[in-house]
Length: 263
Image 1 (cartoon, rainbow, N blue to C red):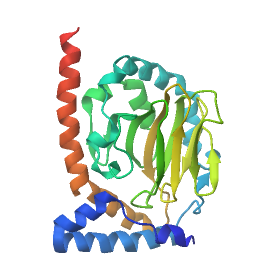
Image 2: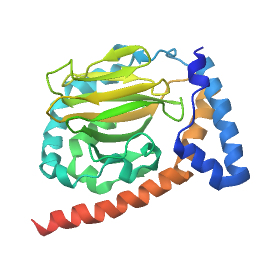
Image 3: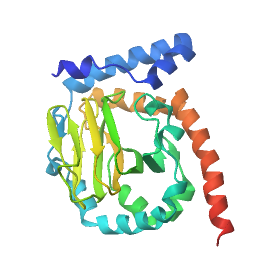
């Protein structure tokens, strides 16, 4: 059991939940803390920082159709300049990124879907349905020069899946460190890791880098699997999810409204 995961600091989002929710928020935080300990003890896939792709057979199926996702991404990137910076729709990341060099195109997250985005990316959405326990999905776009500083995710009940879609062929300038391991994305290949470990990512090249960014439920044994589902289902009620939803809906109104004017 890795003590670094248990002792990780909470993100701004959870701190905000605690300050606003009073007694209820404190009870939720107690549930989260207990769930994290259960998740470590009852993991069905161990607790490494980075997982072998073959531990998740569905990942190879996603890789096999990556070019369909890339084709839909290319159409989205025609309007890359209109896409929101990640911090503009997620208060959770404002403490680690506040510039315009990390953009996102959101498909779904913790019970919330963007039907407009799904309509634009039907093949991507179909492929995402093969991922067991899918919790969130989006395109994550690093502009040239972006460096995301060391940070940890707020909860260890999910794992993160990256699928390389546009990756500059400069491994000395583009990569991600998870705990003590440094990895490099490759187009059409998956990278699966536990974002509860400290990690940082960078694109020091002069080209854009894009991955399909997915969170999915960590495979757990009883009783942790039930507790984990309860915690994840509560996420939609937290302030940073609700505020992010409102911000994203406002952006959608602008983005798709402008898009229709030009048709």
